[in-house]
Length: 84
Image 1 (cartoon, one colour):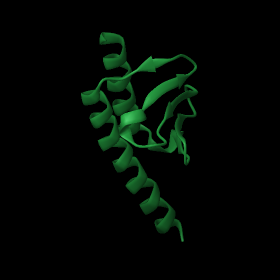
Image 2 (cartoon, rainbow, N blue to C red):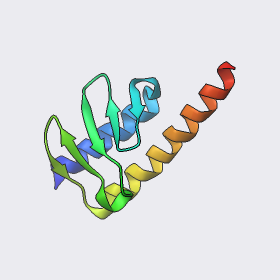
Image 3 (cartoon, helix red, strand yellow):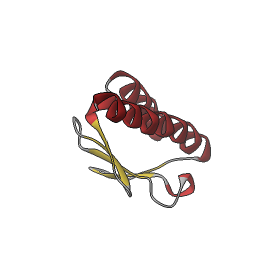
């Protein structure tokens, strides 16, 4: 599981440093710089990395990633409102 732990660590770091590079859709979160896609539909119980490779995450990793995805959603919403 250390591999999936490293993936979550890198994602959390990337979300914090370069949130503009991430695209949030209804079903997935995509890092445009690395083309890494995470399935986020159906809630955190179903989070998984599915492109360009498959990786399952344990519950603690999903909870941690969920926290940062929620922060990213808030940041995206605020940045959209700030432009107008």
